[in-house]
Image 1 (cartoon, rainbow, N blue to C red):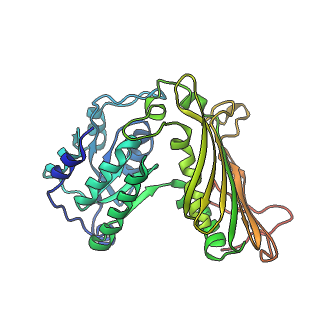
Image 2: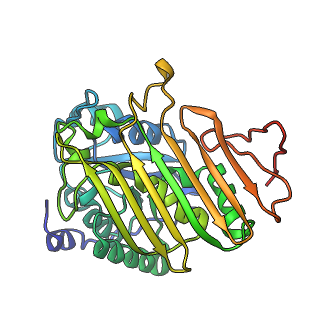
Length: 352
């Protein structure tokens, strides 16, 4: 891992990309993908390659033969040939090349996010970063401040890929709870995420998901999965956490956290009760054999009503958003995992 000072020196060469609007209207956005692991090869690289307004111009990966205990991965040489772009072993090397970039997609190990994000912003690049944003509170505050300054001074975008928050259903939930205050002031949230992911977090060979690196405090289900749920809760409820008490149950095989319980207090006086576990039997990524997938539930209790948003990701029909209380009037039902509204018997779809 490079020191922070070396990254700063390497990234001193200024690069001035077009604004987001200009780059999307005049030409394809030129993106460097940082990391060539399982998630990058299975999702980010193929999705970007199919996007009509984006172009993969570089892949950055220090390991010429990326490994994954989940499936076989291509070498960086094969990836460069597949996507028609050069491969660099470090971001510093990519930035020192004549290559012109507009933005970075950061899908590297959790603990590397801070240094890479800071380097990208200092180089004048837009940044889309995988969750979790960082693994250290001080780094998170520093990166947030740098992102705010880059947006203010250079018009740069800095986004975290909390994927659920970008779905239309999540935006609808936020409009109802946070913006329109259909449940009044949020006072308490009960939320959980339970998944069949022991095959991932209980296996010590899955080092990227189980072993802590850098300034991380542990690794496992909390970092890998609950970051999704917490991002959704903060987004929909408009809540700002101030204090947290958490307890984790660790795997005897891998050392990763398999189950997490936490109580979080927020700046408006609201509380959050959080439960998470990877210990559901089966495989969350397989629908065969009656597997239901990952179960997600978030219940927002306000002083004027309640909103419930929950379901299984392998069963879109199970997902719904329900409002109850004197101000709700009618009950909307929205699938959280499919791009359409799902009407239910006895209720009416609320058109947003």
